[in-house]
Length: 609
Image (cartoon, rainbow, N blue to C red):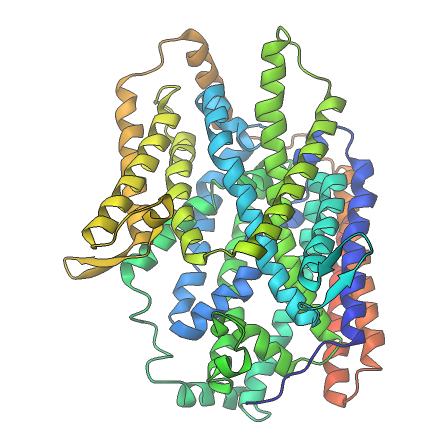
């Protein structure tokens, strides 16, 4: 097997500078947050390009470069259908959901539930979504730190701080968690959007280097020969667009879940309603659709090359439970020079931090705006807490949620977690919870209680079907965890699994209850008036009649330009101490690319100014 590189001082310099830049953004943009509207929706003045790139990268994490690469390594070219599903989902946002989110004129994601159904529905959703998402963030940080601590080479080391000691993994986890909290707590959505854009730049630069280098190496110096060699040397059936490991029903169910996930997920809605003009939602959705098609293809193809170059990953990573999940990282450690390996680690960090910071922010918005404020209003004779108090509560909520996620990730380190169980739980809850949101935005004839009834029916049906399927398969159920056992079966010759079952039955049952409930329309005048007000808003275009570019909207472009320039200058400097001419060239080209990005965003700022 080819020898792999290890990170050195050049890489550590890149990683440290990246983390300092991210933390610095939170500190700098904190001055933008004069109230909760600034903190949770960037004052409704988020530039569409910044919002688009933030929207795109917030859907990625370390899973894309770990679990997704392992899936591709095992499945082959057919994985392209799996990971480009967002392309079709974003077009629904282009034509329908982007403008509806903007027209809803809300300040927190779940406020749409209060306006469409009732305050009780928002409380109900808060209870059943906040805790699972904190657990999800704990899993995300845990997975990220497994990769980072291993890449840095001190995962098994011990650090003695006198009163206590930490393993290298724990120190990595806490350090990354603190950086995440600093810029998310201080900067709010402004910081999230700006750092997401920087993270997109890093991911883009990494992709533009890894993709061609993989094929150049496989082709012994010739890019097109590399493509030919991949087709000739790959295992039989590996380069076919159909695969037994990717059944059609599994693919269809995943596409359906993407339609919900990329149109009515809470952080998706937050990006759409945080811009000034609804016409910009079409630009956002169109750009994300293109990136959702091109990006995954450019990430998938190098993994196919890794299948040829590294046919036995188990011998390289014997300590990993699933060595195939190290396929993308292995390829990078083989073809990338030191210095740029620091960019690789920063890119993985960036992808995961982007997903985590978005979740922290919208969770805080929900707890503050949709739970805390209504409760205070009810207990205080209709008087709301001041906006300053709400802002402090929001920042405190981000801090608490972040600390809980870090603590949970420490627990995962001791007890472990199952990706299959996670996928089962995700598929059990996501479609049934988002069905009332998606349908409720376009069909507004159901009563105030229909959202809770539909979601409850979906969850109960899916859990019941999981129990039945496990029992039919001859497996015993001794605890709650046994319900999530993975089983497979076939109906009319088509293979089914738990994932497909959860999606189809969940959507059918929740959708059925939702539409049947329209037979009992609202009778309370308050409910009728509230729904009529929402209906009027959703029919009225939300244009920015002023047409003026707010100064706050220009600042993000300048910040991204400066950060990209710093990254580019650093790589240019490192290129002179990289070693071989090849390594110098890669770092130099990447540095020049970062400088070009910086120039582009600076010109955007000047244009709007």
